[in-house]
Image (tube, rainbow, N blue to C red):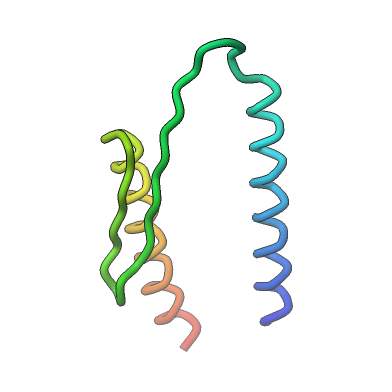
Length: 78
């Protein structure tokens, strides 16, 4: 079971790198804006920081979805 989770993690990292490479090659040339977003958990509470509101909403929504996933998977697996 743990091997599958590790392989899933590596697969997600690999897919993320491919999406970044494809996005940077297909992106607009010239003047573009740069933003950042960061999110995570302090205990069970999701949080996030971002340079723009849409990014903040996105990172907090992803954090809440992950929190729900962890809560549901803990009940299903145990």
